[in-house]
Image 1 (cartoon, helix red, strand yellow):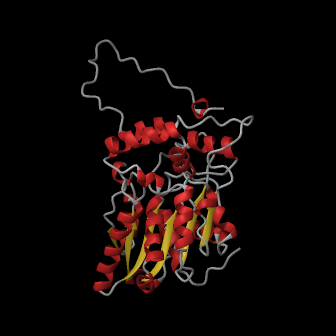
Image 2 (image 1 turned 60 degrees about the vertical axis):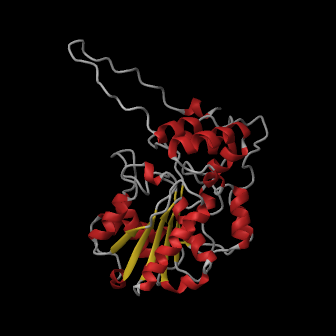
Image 3 (image 1 turned 120 degrees about the vertical axis):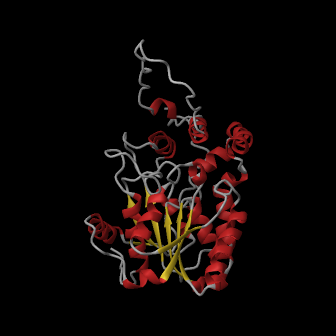
Length: 340
């Protein structure tokens, strides 16, 4: 079944009353919308043909690295308290500087990570957005994250790194590459990071026709580097992780999610991954690939890739970014948390 066949029926166009003028200056579809349409051209997900593509690669690092500790039960306990506006952050929380790192296309999406940052500031925490190029190469953005850490260190600050998606990978990669920075980092929160790789990115760069489309459209639509998508392929992540494993001595909470729901905006891509590979996926990252080795992992089967960073519509989104981030930070700073 092709991804396009999984989409809900297209509603009929709205007909304007004859006594009202037609709207003028209607904006063209956004760059993000155009890219999503291109993603629907991914290879058909059929059970009668070899899977190819990313088959067998999700969670490839599990056999080579330390297992995570499941703290999902504790997450639900704290998240319920946060939603009731009960305090959950430890006293030490206000001593740290919180550096937020956006993921792919973060600069293109209005409101991206805004609610996350606002909630932290409402709790009296000091935040900074790291000025990464959200369509840039991993190596370039690691240099930006490193400079942000060095700046914090210069002023005697300890840091909590909060990264979403590709931003989480860039935050963790910085610590893997520069061990001298680790003692200044109190904790890391990695929300839906493609630590092992992104199945969608991998299929894009490994399918010749789609790779050609990516090379042409990514720079023109986003002024970005198409190689930044390849940085999230399985081959590139294997190469990096094996050379620069993530340290196990930094308190890290990883959020690994999936959602297969008609109410999810990421449903076409979730369906594509489910049908083609049989993997639980949030729309861009297979849940297995977000389980950072040695981390405390929160596993949620009712969240898509957008919900952690963008405020969704009531009835469609299950989580609010601010409440989610507050809960994850409380878990990252809680040395008493044990697995279940």
